[in-house]
Image (tube, rainbow, N blue to C red; front, side, top):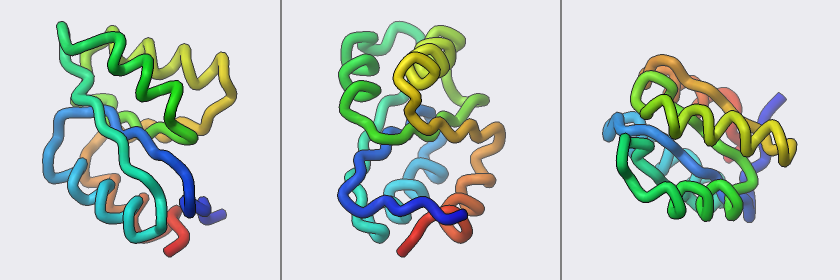
Length: 103
């Protein structure tokens, strides 16, 4: 079932730049607000928490984030009931763009 992103904030966590660009374009085309965090070791943890709080939905590029960021995303989404899409391979974001987003 497609996800309606109009007026929603979607956080993309991960370091794969081409996949992040694909996600940003799809989210913005669907009327959503794009948020980003790299998910690297030592990157601002407070910024990740703030982004998670602000997001209505999270896309996590699991192969492109630190273990700490991965577990923070998982814990936050589980506690808050936010939808979390785990993407193992960046190419899978093309699937998100074409199938799961209402444009």
